[in-house]
Length: 122
Image 1 (spheres, rainbow, N blue to C red):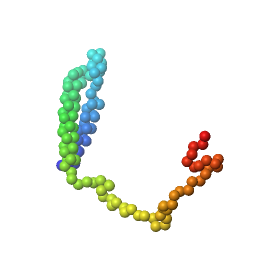
Image 2: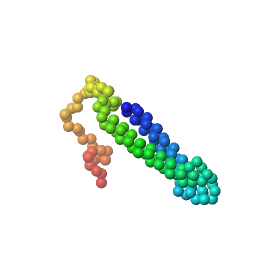
Image 3: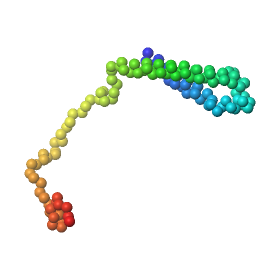
Image 4: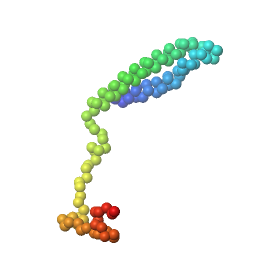
């Protein structure tokens, strides 16, 4: 069922893109007054705009319904298909040849100019 809704969703999205590209802008109505040939089309001068805008609105409603359906299916899924959950976690390994840190205090090495290591020179 989810695959069917997804296929419908993609088809409707492509249909909306096609219908929006077929529609003409607001300034294109002026061209019909000067005989650009739009008035002699299949739907007439304003008939195509009404048909295309209504078809776009219907496809937009179907797009939103399929979006909600896909959201519903996604929320109802209980199984996870994440890569992080399928891979085993490696155990931490401690290298064997590294010596343990000593608890002896660090020695202060005097700098070349005679000051101590932590001092800021003046």
